[in-house]
Image 1 (spheres, rainbow, N blue to C red):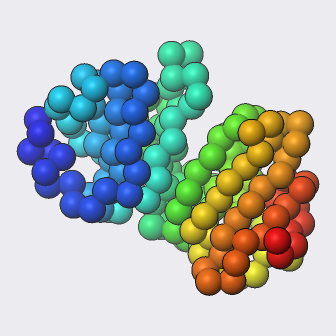
Image 2: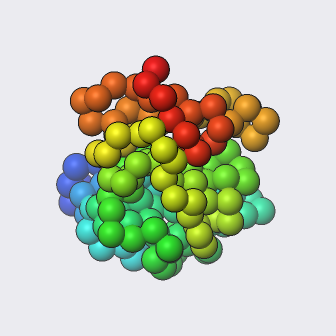
Length: 168
């Protein structure tokens, strides 16, 4: 019930998708199936900084959860989660324009072309530090422009899907 939401602690992301609503926070992931009237806890322990389901939840039940220790993946709409290839760093922001999954982490911006089975190495030119802000071109598949904010070092731009970066 709503007591789940009350004990969730700090919330970092809320994502409504029709009747299903995801909330990511200090105590994990909460899911509502009734527009936020009632909530249940998904089986994720610890702080969840970001949550992102597929753009097509009716046909693709994949949900990603970015935690303080890596990226988790659910293949069943958020009912169960398992670790991915991305571990050992905070996952702060997620974007999945398709087919690429773009992840802002404590190790830079990482990109997966296979739904988090593997990740490309971080691109050159992005300074070390937590990537706390991330924006993608609206037409990323054909215009792979990314913007990233790293710590207090400003905005960096990539025109090649995160392979190389320059101060903006």
